[in-house]
Structures are given as C-alpha cells and as structure tokens.
Length: 530
Image (cartoon, rainbow, N blue to C red; front, side, top):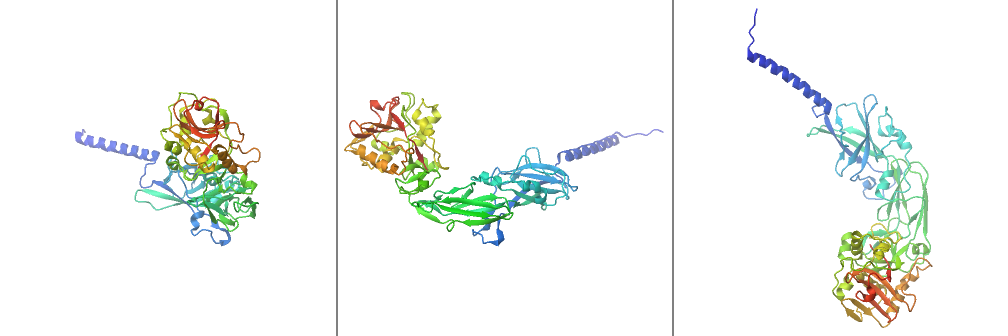
C-alpha cells in the first residue's frame, strides 16, 4: 500500500525537529555559561562593617559611635568562600575589589544564586594565601570557618598609615541572600565583624590659628608601636584581643616644657571592642600663631623659638622665614609658610653649565626680585629637564638630596628662589625692605647690614647649634659667602644671596662676572614649603 506524503507536511516535520534541536542547544549554552534565567540570578555584593563597640558598655568618646566602623575605600579587597550543602568548598578565596561604589568580581569569575543550601563566608583584608582555610567545613558562621586564620592573625606594630592600619584590622562576615530585585539580581549581604580589638588613644594637640586642620602633638613618641593618626589628637591601634598590650610613650605638654610627659597603660580588650586612653584630658587643642623664626620639626610640628626641651630641639629641621606662600605653592596645598634648612647641602660648587638652559625666571624689576617665590617649581623644572648629578647642576642636585627627613604633606627640600632669599634676609636678618642699591639685576645693602643680617639670622640658629646640626651664616669676617638661588638673569648668570666682605655689602644680584653659573663659589642651602 502506498502513501502519498505532501511536501508541506514534510517541511513542517523537519522544522519541528530543527526547533527541538535548537532549543536543546540553547539550553546547553545556558547551563554552560550560567546566563541568568528564572533560577540563576547574579549576586550583587553588599558589605557593611558593624564597627567596634565600647567594651563593658563604657561611654563612647564620640557623639556618633559609627566613627569606630571601617569605611571602605576604592581598591580595598576581601576574600569570599562558597560552600555547598555538604560543606564542600565550591569557590575558594575569590577576590572581590571595591571600586568606591560596588564590590566587583575578578575577570572571568561571576557568582550566581542557584541553590538555597549554599553558605557564603568572607574576610577582610584579602590575603593571597589564607592560613588554615579548609576544603570542607560544617561551619555555620564565618568566625568558625575562619577560626585558624583568626587565631594566627598578628596585627602589625606599624599602623602609621591608612593602608597599614586596615591591613591589621581582620574582619569576617557570613552572607545573607536578599530578595530578588526588579533587575533580576539578588543581594548577597555581609555584616562584617572585627576579630581584633582597638585602642582609641587621645592626646592633647596644637593647631595653627589660621588653619585648625593643621594639627600636631609636640614630641609625640611611641615605644614599640606606631598608631594611625585618624583625626585631631586621635590615634587608633589594632591589637590582639584578650592579650595584655602596653601602650607606652611620651610627649611635651607645651613648647616651653623642660621635660616630657610619659603615658603608660596595659590593656586587655575583648574581641570586636575598643577601650579609650585619654592622656592629660584627651584630645584638647591649643592654638598656635605661626610667626617668623618659629622652628619647623621633622614631624610637622611648629614651635616658637624659645624651647628648653632638648628632645624638641633635636627634632627641628628648619627655621620659618615666611608665613605665606606663592599662588603656585598654595595650589600644591602648602599654604602656611616656608622654612630654611639648618645646614648647607653643599658648598663651593657650580650652579650649572653656562649658556645651556633657557632662563626659567622672568625678572625685569626690583619687584620681580622680591616676589620671585617659586623655588620649588623652578627646582623641579631643572630636575625634569636635565640629568642632575654632583657635577651637573649640583646646587639643585644637593638641595633635592639633602639628607634630612621631611614631614608628610610638605614639599620636601628644594633650592630657594631669589625672592625667598629676600624673605630670609628681611624677615630673619632684619635688613631694611628697601635696598640702598637698586637696578634690574641687583639689590644691595651697605652700612653694616652684611654683619647685622648674619648676626640676626644666627640668633635663630644659636639654640640649635650643638656642634653638628647647624651651619651658621657668615661667621668668618674677611671672607665672602654666596648662597645659590634657582632664579636666573641670563643663560650665563644666576641670581644669588651674596655676602661680599671686601666692600661690606649684602647683595641679591645676578649679572656680575662673579655671578657666572660655572664658577665654584656657590652654596646650596635648601628650603621647604608646608
């Protein structure tokens, strides 16, 4: 018996078979690449630190106690573990990175919600190798899962920066899956708990009368640890919980203190809590008005030039010669003043080669000489343009490499401009603001100003002169001294501060034959902006 098969029916059958095959292929692709469907929802990670709490319910030192919670910043990383219902680790130490708004997965790795029985544990800060991380676990909490990591965690004794502080602050969290969102994602929420303990140290501090954000504690020194300076007079230090830890150090209550005040207390603090140590009343501020002749210290402290405490004197790195800065330097954040180094960086060296560089200054008047205040900019222009060395532009090389540590937030050392030398001789040296000799190339003072200027400047250095820390100005009558400046007159001549003994005149000059850049008569004496 023969059957007649209609062509259209055959095509319908073939299309039906083809659609089945395409659907199977599509389903296979979904399973393989985990494209979101009704049962696969992308996890959006949400992390919050519950903060340190006061131990024994002691009263918090701040109106808002969440000041003890960690605020995550861009670039922070944490590690994530995923366990199945049997306790097997299905995803180990997945590194999540915070971009300032969201926690992002590493390239090529994405986490989806597809099993209600899974458990999620995370820790912070991220470690490339996690001590004691199990491959299987019956843990129901992050503290249990990471128990070996927690028991072996040792905070650093150096927590002096934000990065070092947070690197010691171990936190863990257990994930909670949130409700399905309208965009077909699910939140995976972690409330992180601190596994270490915290010392909240508060000490008296000074602030500048013109800028109360510029704060410092005089002579503050710690024994065996370095805490993180969080805010005015407030320091934080992470310690192991339930372990005796001694917080020991000293500071100077006032500028005129002849002795330092010692603070010392042993702490044992419970996990996730903090204890407060208030030294002499805690973080109470005292105003200081910046003045010419103040001393600038290696930790950024500023004191009047009448200290009797040798500990403070040994921290001095410069003498303030200006209580204002240039517009350019203000743009860098150095808004308070300039200080001159205590010593010469080098002497009897050349400024640089003749007729090589294009003059970087634009000086065409007496006012230009006095107002040329951008030694930092000019120093770094020479540095970026030429290859500096002890023999090539040595006055710049030695100023930049002056081997005295500088505070964070300052400019670092550089060669002063001619206007900054003018500020030194007028403000510290007490010479008249109007010179007795004036032209475009030079300003000069006679009538004994050469010796009186040196005497006045050296008064500020005298208290610091213990035989090796200070190079005084013009201490040998009959000789001349030539302090180099960044400012140039031409490609052959540079400006300088010149104590010319032969004629008993003090010069700011730049066009005489003995201002030749290649002569070995220059002293490199650095300055710093803050």
